[in-house]
Each structure stands twice: as C-alpha cells, then as structure tokens.
Amino acid sequence: MSKLIIMVNGSIYGPAAGFHALKYTRAALQAGHEVHCVFFYQDGVSQSNALCAPASDELDLTAAWQQLAKEWQLNLVNCVSAALRRGVLSAQDAKDNAKASANLAAGFTMGGLGELVTGLEKSDRLVSF
Image (cartoon, rainbow, N blue to C red):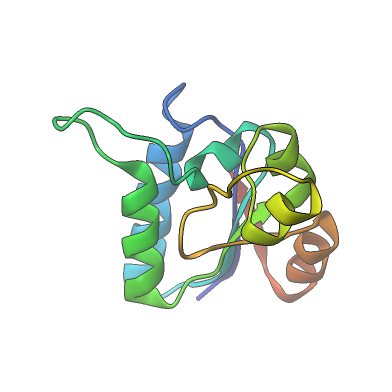
C-alpha cells in the first residue's frame, strides 16, 4: 500500500476541492493506504475555520475533517503563512498578533512548508486537490 500526503488548496465552500479531498482521503484509508497528513494550503486553510456555519442541509466540511481525523488518528496541518493571510489563527497566533480571539478548529494544527517537505520524503505520493 502507498504512503500518501493529501494537499487541499481549494476553499471550503468554493469549488468542491475540499469535498473531493475528504472523500478521497477516507477511501484511501479504508483501502489500507497510509496518509502521513492532510496539508491545507492556499485557500484550503479555510477548511479549518471554526467559525464556518453552513446551513443545516449542507455538509459541515470542518466537522467532517475533524471526525475523519479522530477516526483514523490523522494529522490535519495548516500552512501557517497561508492561514494567517486568510484570517485563520491558532490561540498562539492570535496572541502573537494581538488579535482578540482564535478560530482554528480543534483537531487542526499549524505547520509550515518545511513540514510538508519532510512528509514528502516519507511518502510515496502527493495527491493535490
């Protein structure tokens, strides 16, 4: 089986990149593949915004990522630079930038492109959405 890194670049409720990435990741895990991490980059960091409040008849992608991570002990990593530019802050980032509050959803962590590169060395494939 393959060792994968999943990269999500698309906005949470724009094109369906996040939805397709979620479905692909679940299918890969169920098929026995190892997912080193899901790396959210560019507009993909919006998947980790705890303040997203979709309509009751829509899929809550943030909650779906959190559930998948919990089920499979999956690392959900945001590119910190992309997140800060788009207003997604961890508690530490909010403190460092003198902001009133944080909005990084539970289960997501901040990381950098160095973490992505390190993960690529341990993986067979990068699958990007």
